[in-house]
Length: 225
Ligand SMILES: C[S@@+](CC[C@H](N)C(=O)[O-])C[C@H]1O[C@@H](n2cnc3c(N)ncnc32)[C@H](O)[C@@H]1O
Image (cartoon, rainbow, N blue to C red):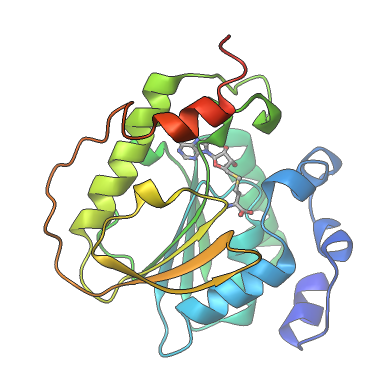
């Protein structure tokens, strides 16, 4: 019903949309899931020219993917998440609402390469590694080493994707993004950024280190003190 309403261009509030989720995932929405509005404009950017294959890194309850897949039925949305129970809920919702152009997989992003996707969505999935206010559940564990490993992986995978790949980051730092991605536009007070890869990667196997990202880590490293 909610997805039908979204499909016919009805304005849906986040509260109305989040009713599709079980209560415990609804409670995480305000902080951890992308709003309907942001999901709309980000997926419109991805799908504005032709049908595309989109990867959501850390898909959570699947909110971004469900909004995007509903509004862009010719495109395909894949979500991966490290938490099995999120993936189980997303897959159950996919079946229940019969959304055929979305799929969810239980994976750590470290197991993913990004080749084969035309567009990548990233809503700072690793903040819980360095920021005590970003805890999702008991599995959240602060680890600067893991944060560095994840950000290096994202950087190096983005380096490998072909020219023409689109990227949207939300509440994420710029150092994850290789210089081969051109910033096209910013929204939501600069927190939402639309990029397009417009030159072949020049940096291979880059290893960002703690010094490179220390300013960002220092701002958020409350829990490990
Ligand atoms: C901020 S939420 C974003 C959810 C979704 N993209 C959205 O916008 O509605 C970040 C998600 O990343 C997931 N995550 C954290 N570390 C991850 C990892 N190493 N691999 C895959 N997913 C991860 C978390 O479980 C969480 O669901």
